[in-house]
Length: 77
Image 1 (tube, one colour):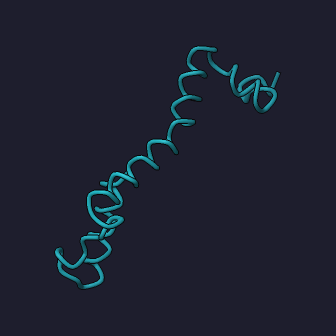
Image 2 (tube, rainbow, N blue to C red):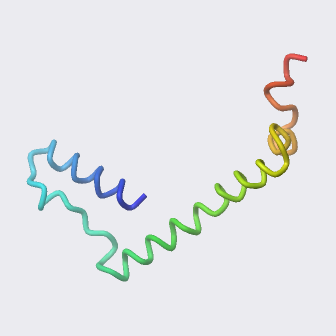
């Protein structure tokens, strides 16, 4: 995610007429800031991967049925 953020800022800066060097974003104040951002992203993505793996173990459609009611593929029955 950090890499995509940097690439996004580079592209938008170049399209705005800045040089590549001027477009490189400052990420949170050096190495410590970069580590802080990486830790925040790691913690923020834990639920995504947890739900993905739990859904795989439960079987197709079970997690959606548990969280949201009837799964989409059974709604027409």
